[in-house]
Length: 130
Image 1 (tube, one colour):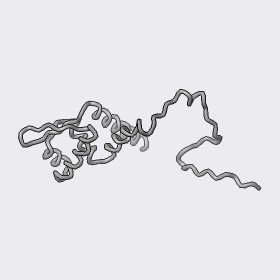
Image 2 (cartoon, rainbow, N blue to C red):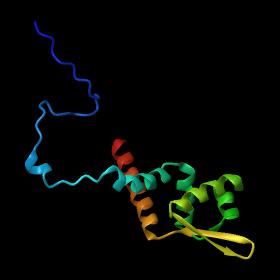
Image 3 (cartoon, rainbow, N blue to C red):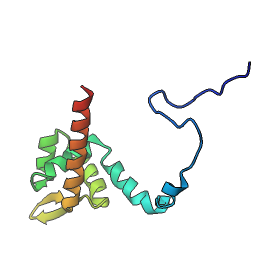
Image 4 (cartoon, rainbow, N blue to C red):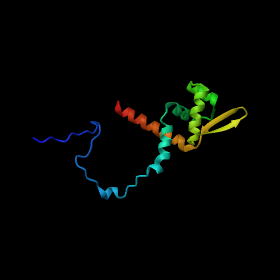
């Protein structure tokens, strides 16, 4: 009796039983290079932190100073400032100085749209799993 090949794929993912590339379909598909898609990966990494997501959610509703964000999120100013610096570096938020305060807002509407769509997707997926 010959040994049958072991299926090492995850039990949650179905895979093809044969290795056949459908060139009629793949011929028209463009997959970006790593260099082309790296900025998008960086953007999604910025969204991969619950504190940064809280900041984005708050700023999607109002322009807020660092003290406001600290109060809403329940974190120290140094921690919030660190996250804001990261978000600013990714062009997700922008700051505006007014007197002794710096007010932050989302850099553009795309940021709010990405956040909202991601939240809607997770809420929809979560409700289907129940």
